[in-house]
Length: 185
Image (cartoon, rainbow, N blue to C red; front, side, top):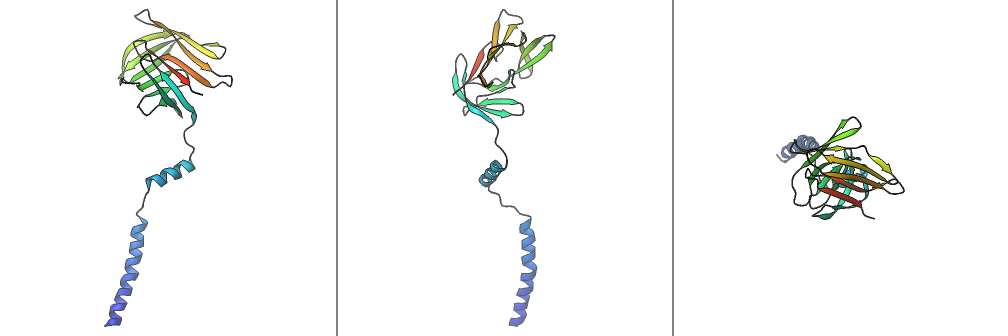
């Protein structure tokens, strides 16, 4: 009786162990922290351009980090301030300070000038006519005039001697409010 019982146990082990191995092979145990570290070691993190910049508006000032993405440079911080700069202009503002409006800025070519449209939730709420960018030593300027009001402004991009962008000044809201981004050293 004992040998018959022992042989049944051996047969069960032979059948059950491979089934368990097959079953466990389909399961994956994951550790998110380890996966993130492995991912970070395999792939380069997004480029951060000396990362710290100062965001300033008429009512607000905060540090933001500059992170390169395929759509441009995102400036963001822990207070949920976030905006996208495409190399020529700020194109989207998700939030700055307590202003939760999401602004989108679109340029439409009209001959040698640009029609700059400011949109909130897809609706055009203001338009400016902008002249082409003019290059001065280490600075590019762009003059814009509002359609419908007498408002005018100048957008500025400044570069250091190495050609790196260090300063952005641009109107970002339909009411003509501007922002400044300055690279911190």
